[in-house]
Image (cartoon, rainbow, N blue to C red; front, side, top):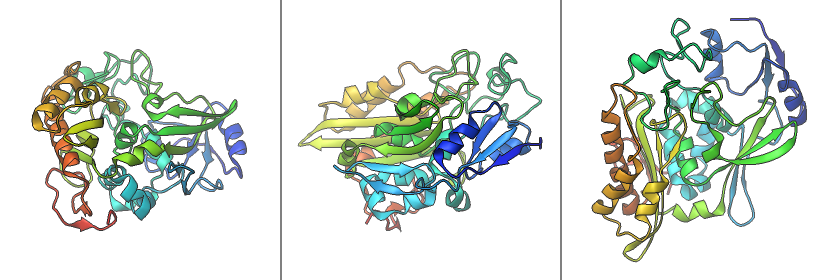
Length: 352
């Protein structure tokens, strides 16, 4: 590991100032960053420890029903907050579908947004990776790429974003609150992560020194509490990143869909909002035929980035399954295997 300077600021303003220097990066739980440092993938010259910053570890209920999730809220605390899990069940289910219990106990909300791709070529210093070294090339493009992106990719990068939490957050119009040298600003989570284009090393819209302070869910998101699900296909049921995942939420009026939200994970370098699918579902009957049309629309622009054409059909089928589950209603209990297609009926009572 390279030598680095360690700073523990007492305020957000101090943190922003310290992290604005070249080579600086923020340290939260470090569940991803420390692995990258140990492997020589990331070599910061300064670590700015955010874990003691005041006021960033709270879940706040705002006027009107919106919810503000502090950047330092632990994943476990978010998923097991009873009021939060009842209001945003797909978010809780997504959190419980990610990583292991030990990692969820440490990982933070902001860290989840900022985690790096799990592409094997990115993690291998001997491989060419434009994300790690701009201009080096992309060995994944002609390598072992069955898990690579099927939408939004470019010849410069075919990696995917690994987050579970971000997928339902994008579907529910979450907003990221950012503090930086120019003051505080807000960015829709859908616009927060960047597609690779010809600059895959630029993963988000953050500028040097920018610090995520919170993620906010609008009051409108709570309207989907009764019909909201997250479903994930992975290589193994426990402790694996998604091949494809889907967050689906429906608001029904009579025998029609009044509003739908659909987002996918594991298919692009950012959580992918399927607005074309939502448009198909607007006013449609909540049935399999409508769900299949929506799935076709969501994947209309998809194309393999390698040996991964199967992911396109997999995503279509998972959209249909997620919408079917959402229409049936949010279960009173989180399934024993959260987000799994093999989920059992009985599980945690945190939605009850």
